[in-house]
Length: 237
Image (cartoon, rainbow, N blue to C red):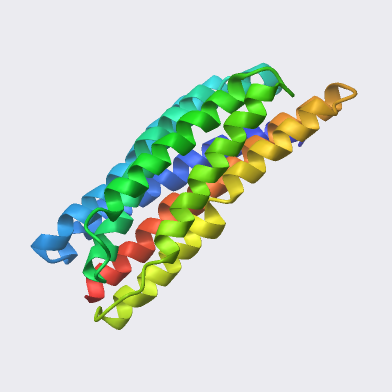
């Protein structure tokens, strides 16, 4: 199995993972207190949107086609960013709800979401420009600074009199945003560097496929894992 086909299979894996997580979250909703069920709905909505987007991306790359084209894999980028611009604010809303239980400032969620939208929009602008252009680097820097601001905001959160489960969830969710989200700029940088230094078709294939695989793994880890951590805390709170 070559790299193109592995990448193609990863999109299918992304869809299956998100669909299974959605099914699980929906089934679990009745196990929570009424005041916590909205957060369960957010978690299910995040993975549901992602499942729809991965289904679409799976079709774009032509799952089942023996030899997908690089252009097809590259064409999934707008769908991926549409996924992120819809789901990452919901992830941060979910984080804000848990953080509020721990005594975080009321305006935290608003500030996180604004920074997140700046990060996603400038990240997209940085990817659609010509490889190696100054605009790409400027947008990449702005996007990375927005992510660092998000990291700064959540790093300052010190759980107050919350339960041990909530404190543990805050710590784990911080790790997702700090380390899990770091995968995305790494993927973008890998693709940009490899494309900038490509000398043949194999180098271009490595650049596009490597970034696509990195993004799928990051999406599954962050969206599904983040939801499981948040809901485990609420179930025991």
